[in-house]
Amino acid sequence: MLWSLPELPFLALEFTSPGADIHVGPISIRWYGLLIASAILMGAGLSQYLAKKRHVNPDLLSDLVVWLVIGAIPCARLYYVLFQWDYYRQYPDQIIAIWKGGIAIHGAILGGLLASLIFTRLKQVSFWQVTDLVAPSLVLGQAIGRWGNFFNSEAFGSPTNLPWKLLIPLERRPPGYENFQYFHPTFLYESLWNLCVFGLLMTLFFRYPQAKRGTLFLVYAVSYSLGRFWIEGLRTDSLMLGPLRIAQVVSLIEIAIGIAGLLWLYWLNRPLPDVVPVDPASSASKS
Image (cartoon, rainbow, N blue to C red; front, top):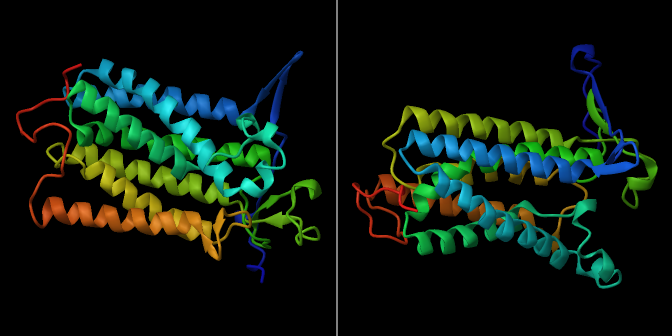
């Protein structure tokens, strides 16, 4: 079933990927990799800026970026490969071809959380304070990274006749969809949703500087996952576990954990378990 509306010229917006590569003379650069690198650099700068606003040593965040890259990117790829194993066991040489796309944000989040947990324990700083400083950068990076899917003509939704739509080349269309040209631009939906979440987190950061540790990250978990659950339902290429869309299952788990954590903080009025003793006078400026 196609979603359609009457002709609305002011809403008409057709997206067509110019291709996955940028050619600069003899050099070919993948848009996907360029966007990920840009997201990392922008996220690092933003996290350091927010750290200064909380009187936290910004060098702590610059050190953490290295840990996050080491933890997040391999886990994002591993997560994707595991759920596409039927393909990758036939083409094992493609497992490391991350520049062609094929990473899962939920895998990146899990890897990043594990790296952050180890990092904060070694540095003896608050895990939750650090995640609060990183959360806005994380969702901003997700908003930027989704455009990599656009350039790769991947991660799109079901066919649509809506005024806003994404043209997918024939060779990129999934089996059964060869006769459809236009699909939901789910990359755009998620990018815009993530920008809204980014605005929410930044507003909370500056308006409520005394918010309890972990608040921003838990709000991120709930708000991002609400959008991801809806958008995932539109996609044609979801990672599956039997009849279940993995991203929707993980999103529901994140929503439940996020709400439970916020209730723990503000209803029960108790701090979240942390890697260091919870002390209002403590600071993450130690490095």
